[in-house]
Length: 482
Image (cartoon, rainbow, N blue to C red; front, side, top):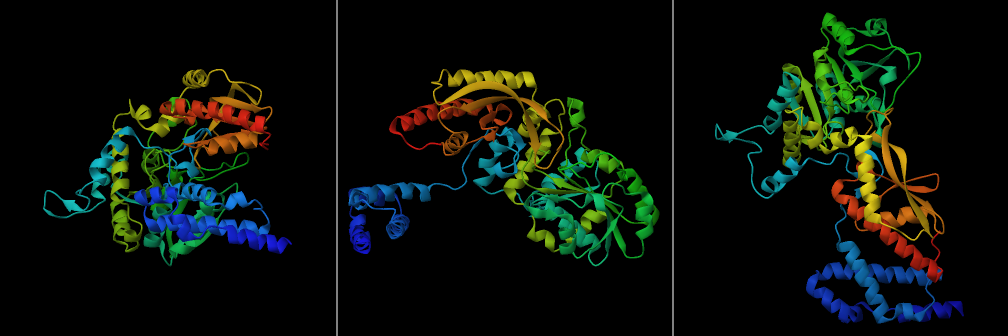
């Protein structure tokens, strides 16, 4: 009987040709490409067959022409929508690796249409009327801001490290402290990158202590580079000791060996001037004698994803000539965003306000409190039968593997569940248009206003208000929302 019932349901599934003649499909064909509509139809029909096979679909009404047409239209909307969409970051993690890291400045955004929608002098020297270098658009300003002899840019910092090691140390030895063999997001590990570059890694010291004599004991004819890796995404505290850039650079000069530092989340602004934890700036590392410095453009710098290489001209010139540099070169839109971000650093009085990442990191508790109260006013009074809304203290994180010990005091909108669960609320807000990405702690849904932009407050409020309405409706219908 069960098999016969399944066969009967299979026969009820509308044929593709019949669906294409349905009124909803006729309207869709006028607006969407036929192959896209066929893709939606086939996906829906395949899912219906799977559900019948597993016993999920038991009602014939689910298989009539109108019901299936509605399902196809919903699927058509889903697959024709862009995959990359804006979201509201309410997590309180400023440089959120999964949410696009650093938002760009207004000045960078204003230039996108002009450059992206037309031609540009990307690799054309307007003075000479001949082929130029794409690095020229940012090299001079990087040299101006950091006092480096030379500069070049690639598509991310992992590529900057790989390219530098491949150029300067392939087949030779690179000395690095065991306490600096870091792993960052995406399983990027210094030992693995070293191996890929063809360099031979020589570990010195211990996890917590590395002395000058440790380096001196291993330096030999095959030593090509002394590498220092800034542990930006973790800290070793307590009984520790390591070499400063100045000490390592002095050692390198005595032996004629270049010193390279991978700063990871390199920054050009001194955060200690704003009452935050001290993070070494690119300028300081170069002044202390590093021959080469690499760092990201999309973390503490506040620009687009890029890997920046600064230092001695002979070293940077050699890296630039490496054929691998073409495989990791930066594109025109990234160059545009990076140049505009760097231009903002020329004015220390306004750079914090004009670069969104720096502004969010440095925003005061008082300012955040005012923002949170504005969000509460936009939400207004809500029926508290399903969840309550209140303003609480909390903390934000810098994120992006930077300043791991820094807790930024913040103000949070707290949704405490009553008739519904925090998991349901988090999922519902994540499915909102646009999605609101929150965090759940101690069974409460939290929205940290530090990372919610001013222009997003009303939208975030609408999402919370709509959540109140939806949950009340589901509760009345007895829907499982826990």
